[in-house]
Image (cartoon, rainbow, N blue to C red; front, side, top):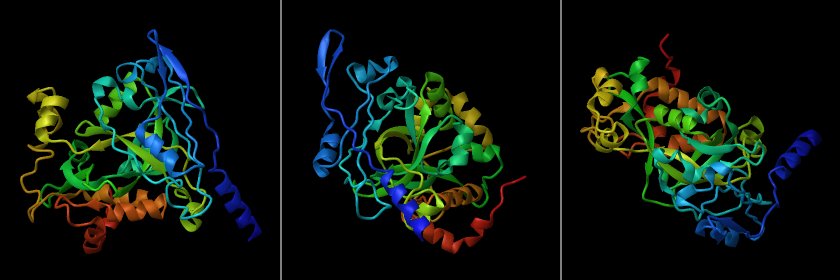
Length: 353
């Protein structure tokens, strides 16, 4: 018992950070710019007097972010000394969504300089297969700060088709079990979604590789708050420790697109590009499935769904419950928990050899 108590106390204290900086004036293009916190940062400060905001200066690559004068940002908030340890760090959400990110700008809007390595980085929000750190490291071997976090105003939906499912032979056209996950706005800014967030080295090549991997999505910048006590056995059982960090920030989130936008923007109006990615698999629509909302909507790909469920279970109860209760089928009514209770054999599905 004494050892356990020691571990719990040590884990809890490790979340606390009291660092902070006062506003500074920066010279840029012959002008003096006074750094003023964004509205949601001011809201955070008002909400919790013990919280301090830490801002880092951008590296030379980001001196002209957002048309000039923009700063890359990192905020560090103190952990609450009491309360539910699987909740955000004592700070109520007052964060509006950033909005759509333009891949042509290489996600510079949310890029920042790492406090540890000094390298330019950007943060990715994982909500499906990227709930698994192993899967995330397969795609991003140099990732840092893998953490469990929370965003607001979004839900997961199994309502679009991903070409990789057809390439790997795990999509079933006959049973309509072929859909992948995306995130979409709920219309309720108070709704929550548990995700993972991790930092990856920024470069134009790295962003291009990310866009290629997630080609069918719209990319939104979203604020996230870390969750304490999630991600390890101690976090799952006792709500302490876990894969977490006391640093809220902005992340790129893959969200719902439309066929028209995908073809005109992502494929640049090139019909052969759509054919190369989807048409050769017999797919004519990605997002605008005509049977969505009916009794014959597309269903989750079984192998992919099992992988995501297992990944959410491994990083704690908050992630597991969020995945089951904040994820919907294409009808936007049936929660994943209900669907799995009706189709329990999905959890025994094995990938093809």
